[in-house]
Image 1 (cartoon, helix red, strand yellow):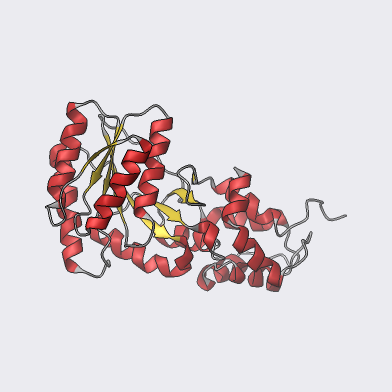
Image 2 (cartoon, one colour):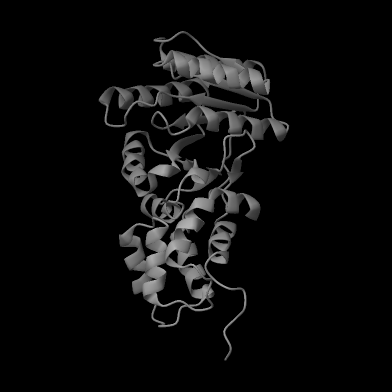
Length: 295
């Protein structure tokens, strides 16, 4: 997975090198502060990290411990359920919802699962068309309707079809209008209720898609969605196209929600399960030398 981490954080690593061109064995607080700022870690979190470090000479082990602490909420528990397992996907337009849904569907399919998609973003005809194209490309079934149709009805029909035909996984798309719009809030809450009526316990996961290129500005967006409907996990997309990879620490720390996957490319296979240990290790490999300081 470290290869994917390097690919996904390539621009972040380039940004870090502008303030830390050479790898070191030991950092000062000022150097660590500059590195974290350049990676787009929120300054409030940087202050917390620095205030908890009492050593003047900062080693890799010290930084590793502090960064892992900020990701302590990223672990997610297995959910007990009666199949089908229902994922409800939310997020604003442009965050990469459709592409991410296709990647997630492919992951399930490659695991031997029978998958069906629900095109409940009926606000845009293009959203229905794009998801249908992906479903056909991946040879995955889809339930869709016309633009303007009740999205809750699409969600209900998708789950009912999945139950009747013994599908393992259901992935439901939703509209991505701005989170400040009241009608979107009402719509998402209704879809949530209808999913539960169609299948007790559904949706089993409500997943927010966040655009990694937005960095820390995505935090307020995520908080708004969480207040609206409640979020079970986050997928961060487009990390390969941004120098703001450090915002993952800020997002995880601020929201106290698990990061399920990260997107590091446009291909269906470019969605990888988030592993905080490998993520932190990959970042520190670009900052510190492997050798230990002499005593």
